[in-house]
Image (cartoon, rainbow, N blue to C red; front, side):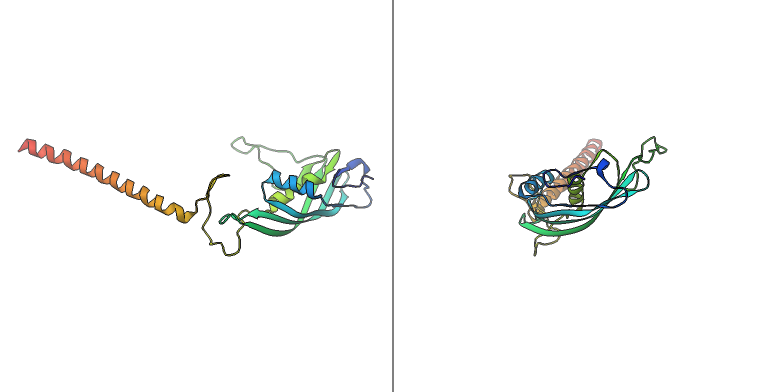
Length: 202
């Protein structure tokens, strides 16, 4: 039976036992963690582990149940300071020999199955792909450093000095002043046209 490792985290379905669960314990090394952090766009991954079992489900399908444990580093959305988060997430995947049929709705668009745990069964189960997807979905969307003010989010492209919501307020004020002046000019123009017509008649 193929033993998954950080170098080859793939399990051949043909070698799985349909009588007993197959355990796995995937722990990517530092280089693999750094590469994964770069792919998913975060500052770093200090610890990472996907451990669980794969067992037969029905006559031809397989089920993976695991726990994802990770310590990740992300940029705070307010200060850009590093934020460390510990994740412990239950992961389930069902690999089906035959996927559910997809039917178009009334608009002719094909709707994806509501069950997001199912995947088509292939010759191998890629534990690394399962780990990457599970980690990406589990990441905090808006990590905040301790003491960061709520609602104050930085706006900056890579390499550009960030501008916070507070910094943007003067620009919002200028925009409002510009709009006010434009509205006043339009009204003055309308008054001039009206008064000019009255003078002609006089």
